[in-house]
Figure (tube, helix red, strand yellow):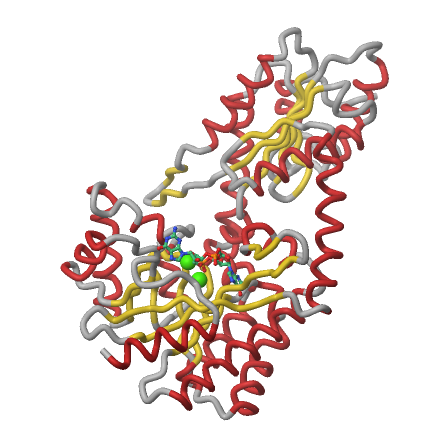
Length: 450
Ligand code: C2E
Ligand code: CA
Ligand code: CA
């Protein structure tokens, strides 16, 4: 027997049972169907209908783990309850709703005469979820993505249907989140492609196909080259020089990430050492940290080891980390970064302004610099909102006594805006694209001669 006949019935049931022993069919936090109960219902539906015209939607909260770490589990639970309530409000009356993972919700639309209905319902669900949650004096933005599959294409049993919807949801998240994707059979082969990409990355590491390019950071007050951000490239045997966009996610998720991370640290530090020997005023070299690249246990020891081995002053090294990654990693990792910071390594908050709680993040996670994300710089001279945000970020840096650098500076107008508003360090195509270490050395020679 399937316990959940419709959502009204289900809610009534969960409320009636308040105070009673936990019911395995109902998710106690949200009152929706539990994962197992939902899948049983779905399975029943797919088995009994001769030609089941139903659709499965999967709603996933973007970066929920970061939210939980930032605001605590009680607040996280409250958000999940609210997401569930909104899901109920936005779904048709005959929809069956379940919570099928920590931050994943499922909607079964049991009868869809008109396929465009699925699009409408999906859009309505997502649009309601993107509105801010306000309660007490708190206001949270929780963003979500949605994957959908329509039967029979999605599968003829519950587990296939769920897998199809998950593939669609995964695609929605990879495409940046806050969006809807519909399952296509092609997505199954994309997974295989991704798996072979992981294998290819392993080979690439073994065959030394990764390279680092360096992009200059300039102090506008005196024109000095104060920094060099190391940016990874993959010299692919047949596809040429690939930027991280095409492989960094697969790399971060693969087992070779840690090896690449160590290689990257060594290579960038060795380069910093070369420049510090060759130039009186050598730039600091910045590397980007992603989670698996230097796993918790290795980060501190590895960085200290490399600095000692190369006799490189910690002040010559900078670590760029995004808020999301810092939050995903938790306390141990943050503690190690703070220790390195006390050693003299510069710690920078990358993509500043794009995270969940950039300002309160700075409170729990002290940094030496913030890097204003290029999305704010792009239209800073045309868009007054971007201009106001950039000014505010420069002020935050000033008040906290930490450095501010702007990235993605492409035009003289953007540079002038930044200089006038007190942001004196810049990085962008206006000064130089990411270049090989040799080219960067020439760049340093030219700027020293000026
Ligand atoms: P990011 O850390 O935000 O790096 C800045 C990106 O902006 C770089 O792209 C850079 O080439 C580009 N950029 C710099 N100036 C300008 C400009 O004036 N205009 C425009 N339109 N773009 C500019 P890239 O090299 O493709 O890197 C993309 C992302 O890949 C990086 O974003 C970073 O998140 C990641 N990444 C790159 N190298 C590494 C690495 O070694 N480790 C890790 N973990 N991530 C890396
Ligand atoms: Ca960066
Ligand atoms: Ca950045």
